[in-house]
Image (cartoon, rainbow over all chains, first blue to last red; front, side, top):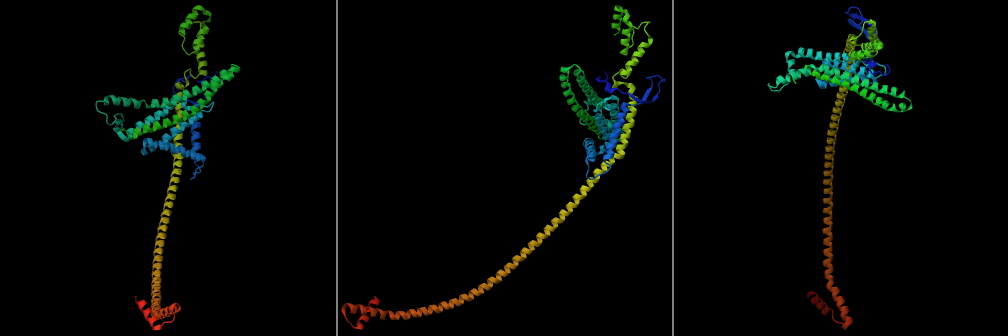
Length: 258
Length: 217
């Protein structure tokens, strides 16, 4: 029943194996590397973004055509986001935020195509992306501010006797950022795809039950259509949320005192 | 599961192998497996399950797929970052800056033209005001000269008229005095005629005296 199994869409299959690091040579031991369906869609995501942005801006028109205008709007959208959240100093991280936004958005949209794999439905991918942000914030924060970066955990204007309570809370909230950032994206995409699959599965199951079943399957069909729209929205909103939070975390690294 | 297997073993010992095989498909080691059970059956069943469902765990939490995903995410994201930061974003930024520069230049040119227009309008208005004041001056002088001319002519005409009027008045008074000298004579004639009609002839001298007497009253 792979057809209606809501989990089957997340299975990663090797398309061709590459190499294995460590292990004793038996099946399942060591770190196994392969080109998988997930890898294929990562490559597709990057290819779509790069080809579109590079080809559409090739003419460098002063009065843009439609394709070039979309690229420019995307650029200005992310640039304004970075500028408003992290200031002009944050613009050195603009390519990073742009890549994160474009990658997550495109991966989510690609995942909405039937039979396509959703790269962001795997926690390791979203966690890796959020760790990239987290480590960038820590490394740049200490590089730029030195020990003053620790002021992040000491909000200004808080009386000294509350600090033993506030500082650990700030520290825990800071350390939980990569988890919340990755689980938010992963959870939204995963839950949305499972729900969509369950409802479309209902259509198949009910319509195999005869005439009344076919009539009744209109209900999950309507639900599935509505959910499809919702999933497109969720995919776009989650990419935006990830990018905005990245900007705010980067702002902490640039201006550590609250 | 195991307890269930034991319970069913007690009831139907012949189904023991089947139960063990079912347990094995769920990926759990069967503690109660007995000696005559086929030792490869459990492994085989687990492999069958893993073929259907990855390693039998929820796919997004399957650590066996992590190395490949991380490897390809690193490769693709690094490639994306390179392409974006080296090619695409500078190009779009360049387009936007170029457009902004062009618009700014156009705006500056428009502003310069506007200032030129303003200057031209100011010059025009100054010239107009000058011309107006000149015209006013010309009108004033010509009006004054005309008025002076007019006044001179009028005074000449008036003087002429006055002299004519005096002459006429003199003539009229002369005529009047002359006429007044004849009034007594006319009155005496009339009176004589009236009296003659009424009472017959009387001397002219007495009538004259009576008229003079009456006109004196």
